[in-house]
Amino acid sequence: MTEKTSGKKLKEELSKKFNNAWEALKDGELEQVFEFSESYKDFMDKGKTERECVDEIIKQAKENDFISLDEVMDKGSVNAGDKIYAENKGKAVALFIIGSENIEKGMRIVGSHLDAPRLDLKAMPLYEDGGLALLKTHYYGGIKKYQWVATPLALHGVMTKKNGEKISIVIGEDEKDPVLYISDLLPHLAKDQMAKKMGEGITGEGLNVLIGNIPYKDDEIDEKVKLNILNLLNEKYGIHEEDFTVAEIEIVPAGKSRDVGLDRSMIAAHGHDDRVCSFAAHKAVLEIEKPKTTVVGLFVDKEEVGSMGNTGMESMFFENVVAELLNLQGITSYLGLRRAMSNTKVLSGDVTAGFDPNFPDVLDKRNASFIGKGVTLTKYTGSRGKAGCNDANAEFLGEVRQIFNKNDVSWQVGELGKVDQGGGGTIAYILANKGAEVVDCGTPMLSMHAPIELVSKVDLYMTYKAYKAFYQG
Ligand code: MN
Ligand code: MN
Image 1 (cartoon, protein in one colour):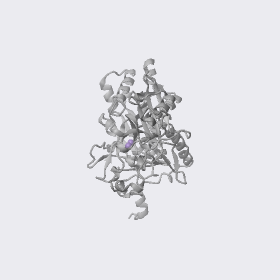
Image 2 (spheres, protein in one colour; image 1 turned 180 degrees about the vertical axis):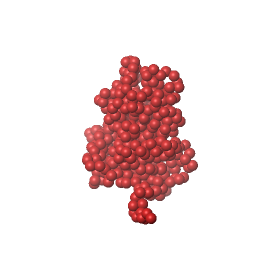
Image 3 (tube, rainbow, N blue to C red; image 1 turned 135 degrees about the vertical axis):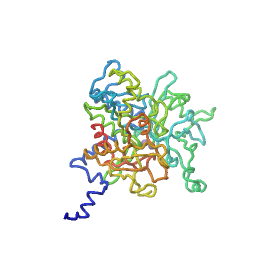
Image 4 (cartoon, rainbow, N blue to C red; image 1 turned 90 degrees about the horizontal axis):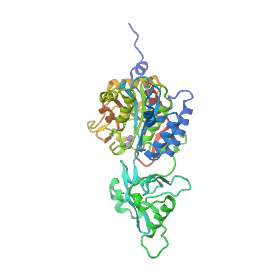
């Protein structure tokens, strides 16, 4: 007769409870969490647009012996262990470390995006009204418009002048810089506004950015405030109003990322979605040497607007680069590329909604991810009956679980919202459509798509640890 197992022991053996990642840290890891977070904050302060992030990723890649795809093609060969970056129009980039196996055997990719919800300037943005100079904007991605008023803003972008010269402009980040600002209505006169639905209290055409108030000294002309701003811009950057029509200028919150909490456990910053996963993947790639399977850090643009266009995940860019590399490995057929894609394994690195005690009703608490419990595996996204989702295969999920458990990665599962509450998607389905095994795996966060978002430092660190373990297989 066997002895009856105690209920406590049996419960431990059979049940699953996701641990707090802070409590699960090994000796010395707490220091690493905080150190890693400092380098992340530095990255976030340098990269507030997709272009600036690409510049920073390439700069750090070069410092770690990566060479450009063009140089590799000039050289005419690739070898195991080669570190290569491929830039896509300044807005997306892929980092490769060539494996000892041929690329046709597949790759290990972490794919994330560098674009973030923000306000873009319209083609003819500058105008004057009520003695003020303003800039017209068109929002990019899914924003709550009321969050963008009455807060300090900065301007980041590129312009090409009439002579073809490209200039980069950043205004509002240096502490000595002026900032920009969108006004809101005073509560005293907001009776009608406050009676509106939250989505209608501030309109898209109402997101006009204040940029000046002093008139140009000349009694003969009208729109003197606008002219004064044009004159200041011309003096500083040599630009004319027409240059705005061929510019890409983004309005983002001004200022640096900050620690949150007396325990300094969290980080508030613009664009955690999805630079938190991008940074984690980037750092992980830089630490991989001589892999068996080719390792890829893929950082794309335009996810927030549907991944279209030649810098989004739907573009041919990535496959074209893989085809070039295959070609250098002696595989010139289209079939080789198709094999490489379908033999590939991908973590789609994107953020997910963490449980928010202020809004407890939108998630199923038993299937929600929590801030501070580590990186989140999301089997499927989509909305309603999983519509539009990439539903990761059980076999691949099982493999990822083994890797994470073996490497002491604190991980949890999370579904983006209660059934029928809403939903969302990532770039996962695009690579899955090519035949690759893909699962969403990223950092849980609060206030997603707000101008300033929130992540926990331990979740950032576990995301990095997860990606590195995945790369190492
Ligand atoms: Mn995202
Ligand atoms: Mn997003």
